[in-house]
Image 1 (cartoon, helix red, strand yellow):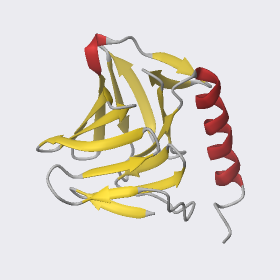
Image 2 (image 1 turned 60 degrees about the vertical axis):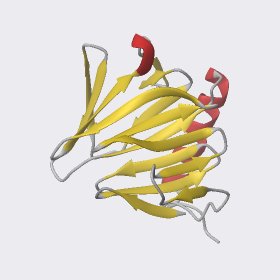
Image 3 (image 1 turned 180 degrees about the horizontal axis):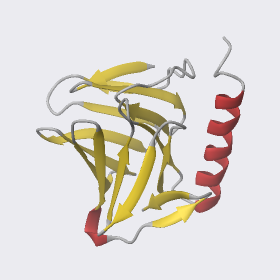
Amino acid sequence: MRTAWNGLELEAIDYEIVRIGTHVPGLGAFRDVHVSARSPWRLVAGYLMVQESAVGELSVFSHGHPVVRLTLGEVSAVWRAGDEAPWTRIDGVPSVGGVALVPAADTTFSEADGMVRFAGEAGWSATIVHGPAVEKVHNRIELLRSLEAVGGRHV
């Protein structure tokens, strides 16, 4: 399911896997998703929720608990971990609180001062992958990579 918020595209790719960015290539037709356009705007896919938290800002929730905040820039996005939680890596991508942020092939990321910044020459795109267990995050990243390799779902 595809939707939009504040100039960003969002697509639920699978259960607890949501791509977000200024350009989001289509990968699927996953429909077990709830989107509410009423204030606050929100998208719910399983136990993963993305919700408008302030003007130009989204929060990512795991099982109802805030994990990461996304602040928008012109051609970049800055992700901040909630509760000063430390960033780690799962499969080489930044992760915190059971949520991994997988950059698209044309998006770079850098880490500094508890933040992860995504940028690209023509905008940015990343996939939010929820576990929250490390093994689930790993398996869902593998599923994401498989869907990317075959061009998405063929329904």
